[in-house]
Each structure stands twice: as structure tokens, then as C-alpha cells.
Image 1 (cartoon, rainbow, N blue to C red):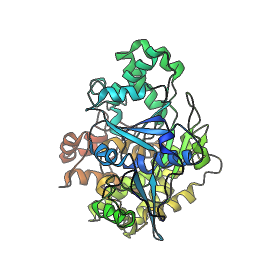
Image 2: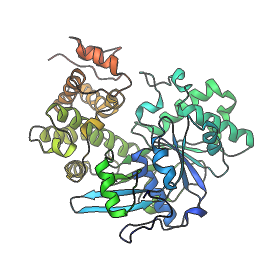
Image 3: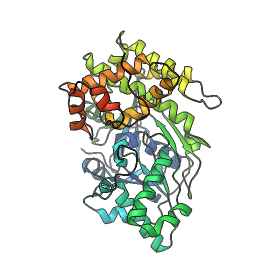
Length: 441
């Protein structure tokens, strides 16, 4: 039996504490993968459970129809399994109303964005989904593509403007430094080319707050779905698995109404930057290092890699001695305690977080996760042995038999195979733009 709104749910499973049928869809979310379903959708579910109304989510898949096939037959319902060494907690999430596949029903996506009930478009499209050129500017040719977020947002905003509706909040929830400002600049570039009459309206009416998101969400396996079915009594094809820890820091700059996420655990702040920088350089930087170094030493999962006595000291040094000094901490932000908490989270044996999953899209992640830290130290005449070991492990990964899932995969493999690989990758004019330059020993 497949999970649906008619499925009798066991008393041990927490269910939505609100009338789903009475909730309008106030959020359109692009990139409705496992992370969104374990993070922002959970906060939104909690906010509606606390009394907020009108914040149902219309999910949009820009490429694959997999999530629509998982959730639409289930009336948008799915479960979140929170796992720790103490056991598993299972809950049912009702925030998602439907999932649209942009390539199949493009007008439905535009209609959702231009609906008077919609106030927020949020995004988890990964770093590569922003379609940036190597210098960080918008790749306009790619942005005009059929599966581009800009195509749909631009058309939806144009329809709102034509109907005399208000602007929207565009909420990036991806691991990009200063993600709100980045999205705003890229969106402006697209509108200037495709909808120039919208530029002034966009500046006046729309907002792009910065965010920082943090929760470890491994890829769901068939074994995970089987375990969920054993408790739920029904098959949940949209099941997600995560850890107990969750953090969401949001710049308090919205174009209109929003859920009261701060009442259910999110932090609304004036400046996201210190939290974002710590997360990118410490957590994400350590994760990428664990992936490439761990794979090179034969490990499959994060908890295995961090338990390796050769790897663990490198990761601890990367966070405490290399990344932390580069961060201007906010008042009350304890970076030493944060590093300790991260090490404990990495070691969680209940989460099989695959290193090869983290290794995806290295060219899009490494600049903000590693190279900014390396450049900071280089300006001060300092070296970063842990990060240099991570860079070497990434190059070894590119030279290995592992699949390289990256927008620049072929170019990266060619560069890594060359005798001057470091220069081709990181030198002036190299594939990976940054202020850091490798130095010969």
C-alpha cells in the first residue's frame, strides 16, 4: 500500500497538526530534493502547526520528474526519519501540496509564481543551478535554457507585474557565499537581457534575503524506505533521512508576508554573514575534505572517514586552525564549540552519509569552502597543511576511476592529468577562479 492522505497513521508517528485542505500555497520552491524536504519544509510544517496559515508549498523540479513521481501519488505527504545513536524518530510532513515538473507543465510553474497567494519563491538548486560563468557572472546562454530557474522566475514576475500584483521574496537556501546578493545580481542580469521593463519594479518590489542552512541529509536508500514502511505500514517513496541537528539563519528582509519561522527554531537576523562563513568554511569545507581524502583511503561514509586516525586530525586542524581564524564571529558565536559539535555530528553512526555524494560538483563548491580560507592565510604569509592535503586529494580524485559528477568534469580531468595540474586548475586564468595561487614548495 502506498502512503496517501487516506492512510491510517500509527500513533507512534507524529502527523501534521493543522488542516491541510485549508492551507493555500504561499511558497513556490524550486529544486524540491531531499534537503528541502528535511529542512525548510519541516520548519514550514512546524509554523503551520503553530497556527500560521497559507504557507503550503508548491514544489518545482526543474529537470527530473522523480520527486513528482514520489510525492504526487502520495498527496504531497512524506516522512522524515531523524536518526541518532539513540534511535529513530519518524514524522509525517504535510507542507508540500504538489510537485510540478517544469519541463512538462511550464505554464503551471509560471501560474504558481504569479498566483496572488504566492509570496515567496525559495531555492535549493545546488551551486551549479545558478548558472554562473567561471568569473561569477551569469552565463546568459545557459540562463536562457529550458530548465533554467531564471526563465520561470522571470516569466512569473512578468505575469505578476502585468496583473498589478506585488513583488516576491526570492529566498536562496543554497551554499553560496552571500547567497541573497548573488541571486539578486544574477536575476538582475537576466531581467536586463530578457525583461528590461521589469528591472525598476524588481528593485522596488522584490527582496533577496541571505540565508544559512545546516542539516545533514544523506541520499535515501531502498533500505531506508523499507525501514520506514515497517513502522508506517505503507510505502513512502518520498521518505527522507536526517540528523537531529537543524539550523536556519535568515536575513530579516522580506518583500511581504512570511511564515513565523522564528517561532519554530529559525533565527531571523540583521547579518547572516558570520554564520554563513562559518558554515561554508568549517562544516562544508570539512565535508569536502572528508569526501576526497576519505575516498582516497577507501572509505564510503563520513562517519568512517572521520574515525580514521590519519584523517581526523586533519579535519580538526582544518576547522580550528585554518578556517576559524578567517571568520569574524558574531556576538555569542563560539567557533571552538561549533568545531566540536561538527566533529560529533560527522561521527554519527546512524547516518550513512556517502562521501561520493558530497564529492559531487567540486568545482562549484571548492572556491567558497577552501580557496577563500587559503587566500586569507596566503595574504598573511601562512600555509594551510590540512587544506593543501584536501586539494591534493581532490586532484587525485579527478585522476582516479571514481565518476566525476561536475559541470566541468571533462575539463577538470584533462587539467588534473597534466604535469602542471595545479596551475591549470588554480593559476591565473585557470578553471577555478579565486585569489589563491598555489606556490611551489
